[in-house]
Length: 139
Ligand SMILES: C[S@@+](CC[C@H](N)C(=O)[O-])C[C@H]1O[C@@H](n2cnc3c(N)ncnc32)[C@H](O)[C@@H]1O
Image (tube, protein in one colour):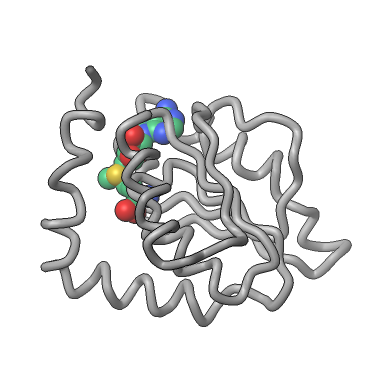
């Protein structure tokens, strides 16, 4: 079991008491353009991805931790959110999709190679100059 698998059962307990986190979720909710395809990389228990889902056309929530993803899926089901999917993926290898908005919240500072992760996030973000779409990294 990884550190983040171990944290999964208690992660939301602590974030619910974090005012800055609640404000960040409200900002994400407002920032997502209507009909955007969104990637929330290293989603944890999915709070940011689910905030994005209110306006987005679709959201893919990815994380390395199977237990974090299990919590995220349960949260989405409990809220009746239907435009979110989940996949176990390393932030350094996000696969073939291209997204209008790419979010990585509270993770880059935890990684050995944050610049490498940022490059991978940029790779899967739609070209901002040509399409006017958004590339976003928080925290
Ligand atoms: C502090 S939590 C942030 C979760 C969520 N983004 C949020 O803001 O609440 C960090 C998350 O990054 C994930 N993570 C750490 N290293 C990762 C990697 N290399 N690839 C994908 N996810 C990773 C952990 O499993 C954990 O869920």
